Amino acid sequence: MPQQFDRSKEDLGNAIHFEHVNIQVPDQRLATLFYVAGLGLTRDPYLMVSDTNMWINAGRSQFHLPSGRPQVLRGHVGLVIAGREALLARLASVAKKLEGTAFAFAEHNDHVEAICPWGNRLRCYEPDAARFGRVALGVPYVEFDVPVGSAARICAFYPEIMGMPSELRNGDGTVAAVKTGRDQHLLFRETDRPQGDYDGHHVQMYITDFSGPYRKLLARDLISREDNQYQYRFCDIVDLDSGKPLFTVEHEVRSATHPMFMRPMVNRNPAINNRNYAFGHDQASWAMGPDQYEG
Image (cartoon, rainbow, N blue to C red):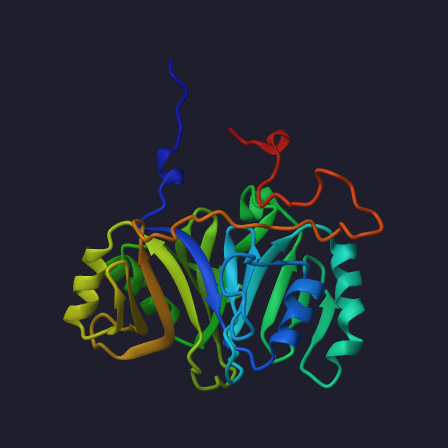
């Protein structure tokens, strides 16, 4: 008899890849110290190479860091990156140059929290296939702090409007988990802490049914920007019944036919320097090796 498989576990829904978080920074040098020298990530060598914007590769995802008044995401970004001790050493090495900013880092049981010079929080995890899939370097989730009582309604918004599967989780608070790609999620965690005003940062994902969500968003007057043939944006996540905004964050929505879909990204090996250089070890792989293949 043929082996039985749970085929539903491989369903992605409409979103097939979460690519970037966009956060303005006022100082490109300090951003380089934090994201490249401290975290050990890689500046995109091909695009945005002047001093007014910087794209930082993290596996197959990115941080986009245009110059401007500082923006702070209301929540945190999850980052998978191997080598906790090396990460701690890199963060310590930039601490003096980042004195007088909001920069800080601390060890926790399952992650290292790193805070950028303007207050954005990242939780850095070791690769863990059971938790994050076979990712050795990447952004498995972005978590937003949302008002108490909103998670269930946010959870209802994404499948109905965007075609993106979601589930309501209860554990350390109530959380709406929205699937944005393989082993990638937007998380909306309820909190009673006061929230700052939305400052314009955004997240970006690719979807396959591009026109269906567009029509639904347009019918509710939620389209905030028409970028081009392959891309549009919306900001408000709303209650499906009343239309009342539940949470605001700009979504840059791209089609799977977008010219930049799954473009190759260079990821350097942060352990390599001019003193220990070894041929063939310049790049880091974003995925776990074949010895960890689960198929």
